[in-house]
Image (cartoon, rainbow, N blue to C red):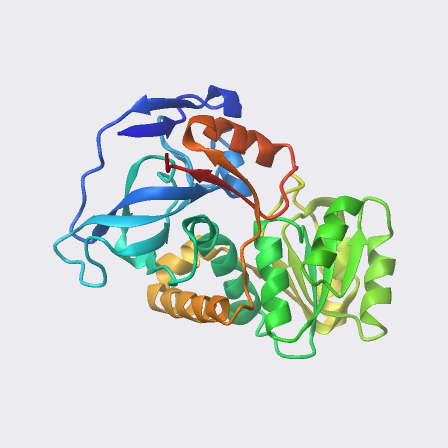
Length: 326
């Protein structure tokens, strides 16, 4: 089979498509014939050697796929050959066949396309864990999203709207602000041009923001934290800016506020049943028309390196998908 392989850390152009063996399937794994794979911002870090997992070269990048079950391990009862599924993993997505632990494989909704399914598990799983498991949002709460035009950002925006929350989309360009407005954001802020703290206070009113989803970090974390309400919550989800903020600890004290980490992949490993229930709730919301992945652009497998470049250069609004169909 063909696989996209990272043999040395570097740029997207260093990735090569080569012949590799079809992976062997363990007793608790499912072999998937990949139809589509989606990229996430952390994938651009793994090929540079900047991941948090200590990956060993060479490896196949990518962490989410959709496709058809080709084979199931002897201890797998949830799926059978021919089932349409979506799945996530740490690496190994961008190849023609991939083996995935069954706890990370989910049935695809009947009306969901392969491309949408490939773009669903990581972004919406992360957003649900953040807003529901960690922040316990409820109708009427205000939710500000930093990096709202990205994959997780769009998912968080849609999910907050589905729970009847007020949504404030914070992004780095007017084009991305327009995109988020089209996604239904109640309020948009271009934090590269506007005073983020001031604009968040304008959006939330005197009570402040109830929940902040921070995928960006860097210089934007502290001013957004200062806009939180009493007992507000800052959800630390990622550092797309490349910089980790240092927030003065007197701020959470004075606001009775919480800084909460959101690390969905580890959560899924430690609490697989909760993660599966989360995904069931998410697919039900999809079936109700309340959630829909936004596909920025689709690349054919032969041009997979271009998908990485598109994401690395911050041009993506929503998700980029790699398609294996001919």
